[in-house]
Image (cartoon, rainbow, N blue to C red; front, side):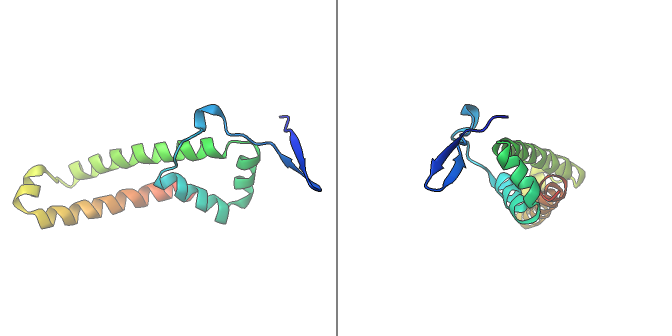
Length: 117
């Protein structure tokens, strides 16, 4: 891989530009969490991805995968726990409590499978 450099004062800095298909992409919650985890805990992996110009692509993939996995987990867990619209209309507080529990479980699974690895 050829990297071009520009001299600024006494230093040469690489000319890094994001690929066209990734410009303007906004990182979601899971992409930002992964970025922070890489910066703080896996510095070498972070630097390799950054220098190979693959960091943004990696973060986009993690964000998309995590969001898809979250939706699947919510659907599976609500079916398993038998949480229905009928419960929502009959007992809203119980429904809210169960849904909050399911959302927390789904996020914990995503953190362990995709973000903090």
